[in-house]
Image (cartoon, rainbow, N blue to C red; front, side):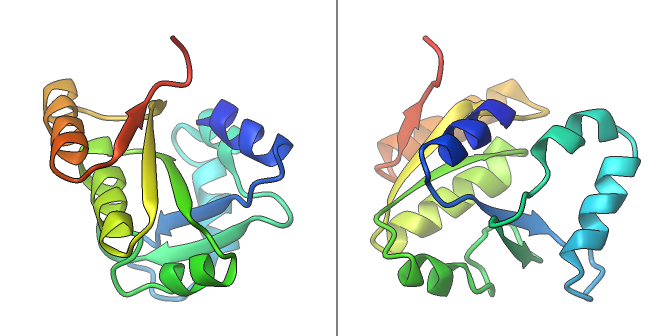
Length: 142
């Protein structure tokens, strides 16, 4: 994930974080980032935190599009393709990619910049995303 984010920044591509707000309902993205950086696994999370100029959208459901301003933000940026990385490939990442396609965007999941707790379920979800959803499933390394 860190490499994908770094490459996007180096290329001048906008980096947009879509994070679960963990049922806080206060829209305090900096507090969520601090909690994650100081919590369990914080040493990994610190390399993934938003930087100045990055955008952050908080969500309450699996898809980054479900009841969020993500679609409006992508329209304002004249976005044609989204590259997705993240945790829970078989859930949030694939659902967001499918919803991107429903909105007329091209979508690519960078599978080796994603995480899962169930590799078999991840493989099934990625196959569905590719075969049914028309989503590109790519590896950053070969």
